[in-house]
Length: 141
Image (cartoon, rainbow, N blue to C red; front, side, top):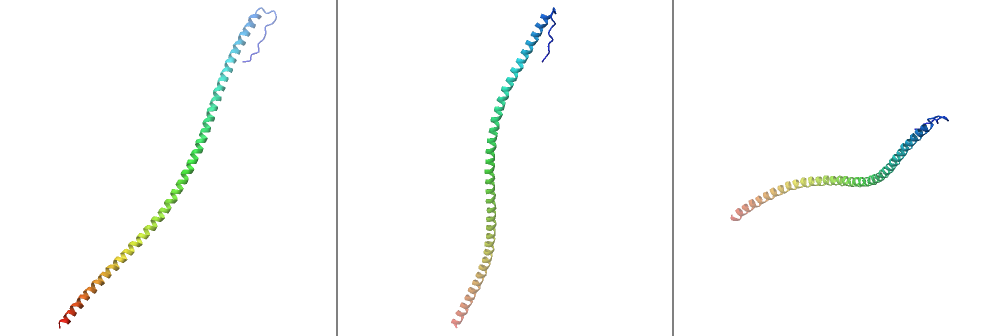
């Protein structure tokens, strides 16, 4: 855009026309430069607005990230607590299962002993009846 104009020589009959053309060209260049400066100012204003908006969005994203991190930590803590409860419950289930097995074994054993005692009792009853019959026979004699 920077042109070096050669001024006309003294006494040049077209000097006035040449100078007028140079002025006209310079005015066009000034107008062009003015539009460029105006466009740059507008672009600068838009850029500043965009930077402000992006800065605000970045701040909001950082805040959201902190909240999400806190939620993640809370969930991790709950997960670990649930995991611990699950382990404890599994141990309790194993113990209850073992105790139940022992109770079933003892119940089976006691059922066997009960059956044996009932059989013994039945034999004793039969013996008592036998003795009573024999005693009855003896007492009739």
